Structure formats: C-alpha cells, structure tokens
Length: 175
Image 1 (cartoon, rainbow, N blue to C red):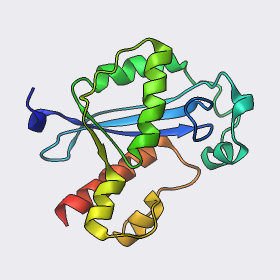
Image 2 (cartoon, rainbow, N blue to C red; image 1 turned 135 degrees about the horizontal axis):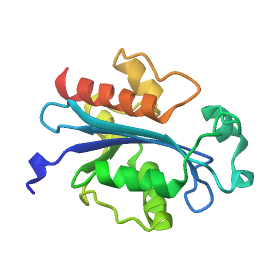
Image 3 (cartoon, rainbow, N blue to C red; image 1 turned 90 degrees about the vertical axis):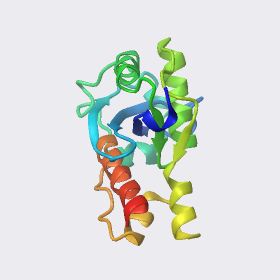
Image 4 (cartoon, one colour; image 1 turned 180 degrees about the vertical axis):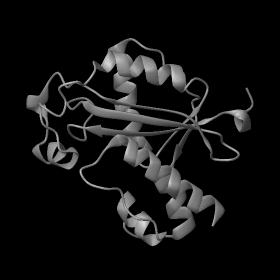
C-alpha cells in the first residue's frame, strides 16, 4: 500500500501513570482519518479494566477521574486491543505524544497477543506543532491555546483527546 493512501489512526490513551512497564491503560480511543482530507472514517473508544490499580499514580487517576464505579463496565485490555487492531489496519499511528502513546499500545498488543496492524511510521503531533509554532509550552492544552482552540475538557477522556488532536492537526496543516 502506498504511504499516501494509508489512513491516520489518531490515538489517545488515558493511563494509570507514565511508565508502560508499570502502569496500565484506562481508556483507549482512535479516530481513523483519511490522510488527504482529514475526515473521520471510523472511530472507537473503550474504558479498559485495570488489573493492577494499586500500582497507579494518584495524580494519573485524578486526571481521568477514575473511580471503580465509573469503570464498572470497562472491558478487558485484550478486547480493546482486538477492536483497535481491526480498525487501525494499515494505518499510520498518530498521537500528540507518540512515544508515550505507542509505548502503551505496544505493551497492550503484547499483553493481548495481538499483532500490531499499523504501518511502522509514526506521526507525533507535538513535533509537528514545534516545527510550525516554534518552541513554547509542550502540553496539548498550551498548543491549543496558541492555535485559539478550546483546550480539552477535564477530567480527561481519551475520545476528547483524540478529537482535540485532530482539531490541532487540521489547524497546523490548513491554517
């Protein structure tokens, strides 16, 4: 498949911390987007049931508003990764912090025994923002403000994050 014909898998995750070898995904969202038009073709969102909540960073749980009640209907990581893999076949994984996001995706694929179906290329929206806007604050909310985009609501939700990343990508490429 030609690179230009691949979809973008704009991915956002919420986690129990920043280290994929210790922490877990709490939410996973992906927007499958046409690379040429940046129109959404498909989407998926899941709350993921944590297995080791005791290893969670307190601040991470606060950021996402985690409570056992709110995650009562969360699904196993394996189920979420299988659906993500079906949706993201042959796509380019895109995220605001691609290193963090992909480290959790990779761990999720391995834990679930699911082959990563995405292209080996990755696109980091932060790097694109830095190249277009120059140095400045590095978080997504700061980039949103610099682009006159309303920042992501709180508590954080993975689908809100994916939608905000798409909005930022459109602004960076087409303004």
